[in-house]
Length: 547
Image 1 (cartoon, rainbow, N blue to C red):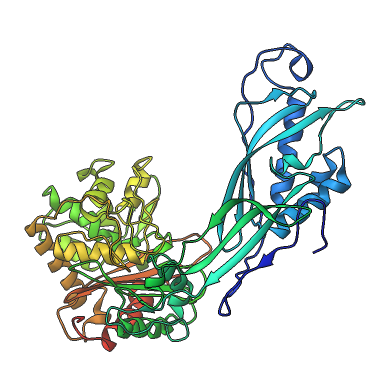
Image 2: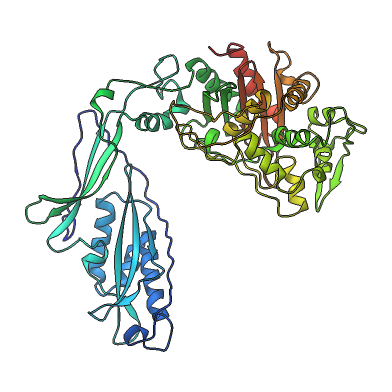
């Protein structure tokens, strides 16, 4: 990159084993402007309660263009387009800034002494692979002789300390992250466990050892190149004592390998799987297909479909609104604002609630919606299962959502895990573990995570009933795909609608011994047919109980 008036090229300070991370550049903008101001002279001299709307429109447009990477357009809104484009381009490229967010303040707009209208804004500049540099600046606008407004170009609008004598420089340094192992000390590497490859750096860096990328944006003297000050630093300072100490996770290498292999049953479809200990919430395996990129298993947002009937059943059983042997008819169709039906439009006249659960009868569950208050399902999910509370497991997660239904149709949908109910395999494995043990344990991939969750135990009678329902689903219901496996397995299948032009997602959750498992296959059509073989493969390859 050529030397320009405001920025020198980046210098990289790296150890011999350092690696420079590069990310794709994108653009996002959040701009909010406005406010109320007293009428006066200049930009306020129109009897208005605020600045000239044309000036604010130009300010917002400049920030939008800059954030979106439309630098020629942004520069064209200034009084010196050539210089502006050169500086803006070099600033973002030279500091490896991606997806900048520029937010105009809601107040503080004023006429400055030089006659310009000053619009304060916050700049959030994500530096690739390091973190976000946040600072405040001010956008000056000047009314033109021929009418209209332009940004009065000056270096300080990019950053208040950018000047003719001082500029910025990005320094990078990466240290080798600590090794990551499973619960028994077996080394976990991305080549052997592909689903873990995107997570290993975060696991190592978040464990207190100071591994991972480090760097800083420094203000330097243009003439001497000497550092004047450090504007922002990124990354943890290495801990020499931890340099050779591996980061131990809750994962089990054998279970992880079996989970990776089991996802081969997804036939190339997007799928994910989580297995965790019932007694502690410790994650034994977490796998995704494809293995690179997005962590569907822990951060995905899916309608859980009929696997959610575990929570719905809990809510009904908790208030004694239904018993397993009560007759709850299962017709083909039921209309609640829209027509609901069962998979393959099946029906079971005169069915008991147990039969409704084992055959996953949507219409029966929907018919019981009047037994629950509008917000009761979400309250049960949060209070007993921890769903929707904030989890800290050692990696980023999506922790579920069960909004209060907006109308009767959405309430009907939420009874069967549709509508706006959202979960993922991590959540549903945890739900399964809670249902069969009676106690929620915040899941974990590393030790020592903060636990902010607050839950109550399920009554023993409800746990016994749920275990019975799930066992019957394997022996006599839709989860027969697991019936030939050793151990007393309980399970629940799920089929979740996505859209009119997509096949349904397939779900299956199960428990055996001290392990709960959840799997989802996008566009898998049915749970037993798509997720069933995945869970079967996993449980066939591992001991009945983890060590």
